[in-house]
Image (cartoon, rainbow, N blue to C red; front, side):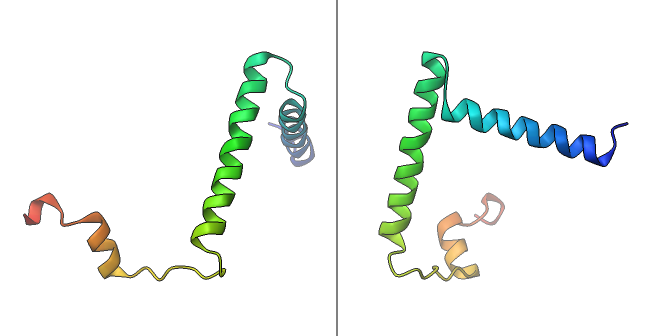
Length: 76
């Protein structure tokens, strides 16, 4: 079993390798994946800025969730 320090070191080194692979992708497939992820991140940030421009959160209660989800099939 690993000690706490070596376990944390393994996690940090894996995280560093992951970030390095994202910062400097080596293969064309890795470059394409990074490009798609960056485009998705920009899209999500744009959607958030458009939907929640005034930094408020929508109020979600049981009624609104029932309207979105609908009735269970057992109650129909």
